Length: 450
Image (tube, rainbow, N blue to C red; front, side, top):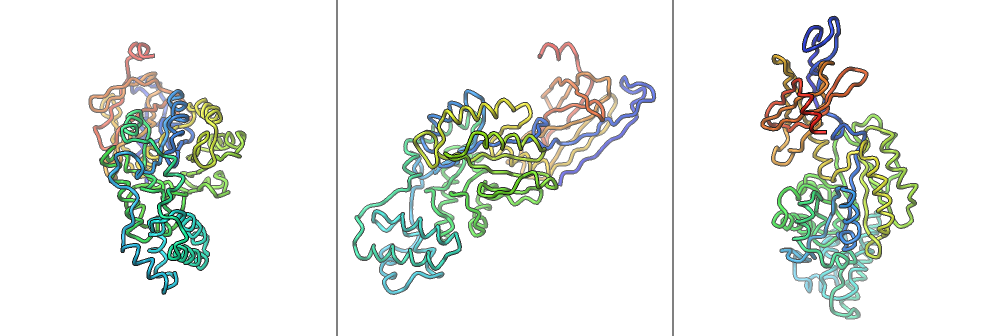
């Protein structure tokens, strides 16, 4: 939990204060959102379809908006790991199905093998079985799986394979392009190897989808981009989350933090009802029939509170992908968001998740040393992963109109502001690094930087 050490001093006669004036100098807090904003917005895309990059990305570049792309790694040219069944030869499973009906003991294996039986059309059975299983109708899921293996044994399906729509729509994506997007500040992240229904896979095949996607991202993009992932279809299946969260440090599907309320895409909970929570992660998924007024209202609701993280989930763009929005609608909506970036922190999914965790774990200490305020900022998280700068708010003497902020060899000149409590400063500081020193700045230098 975030801790703060407050240093209260009498300013009268010190550093330009008026005699008899009392204020809180050195009082320092970590702002709830980066740069002291009122809320956060993360723009995310699922599946990596080609129009996301050819139509939506240029809009975000023009508006200087960051985003997270959850991409299916198997079909990316140059990937080391493609679609694959981990287990017994499928002929054994097909033969066994003639005598042993599908049940709780063999359903996961048969569902895992369903897409790799060597026949076209099997994916339709696999999709329907998953839908029944995830809705709690397990016996119906078993019956559908029996039907699949029956038609395979009868030879009534054509030889071949059927790829999912999501895999086919990602055609043309290459790692070099993702590397370029990452260099521009975008966050490529995992959406598994093949966009599988992980809830009906056995452990070996589930882990293959999660781990091998991560390994390809690690090799082609680096460790920074193995932080976030999204399990396809936005599922929250407890068994999948049990295996998924150890592989990735955060899943958009589930972030079980004690300080945060999650409202995922399909939920109707209103975020304003959770004022007692430090943070509310509110996911909304605009689809073709979503009105612009409704999309605008999500942003307005975020600004009406101080604890909402709005996570927007997009899929299709123009003619490619599930429930597409036109690029013209995206352009209008993103302009609406951009016009409010003085109050909204617009950041990738991974950056917001890191900031929240750092802030809630951090300790900040302040002390007076001569005519300086000295700040120490630290947290106990893995410093190789959690190294995002935090925004500090420190109260300074009323006479400090501009302030020199020094941390290590980095020096900033920052103008002070005022609120009902006194004169304060908002500035960026690196945790687990050198102490931060605040002192009266050079007004002429500050003017020259404006």
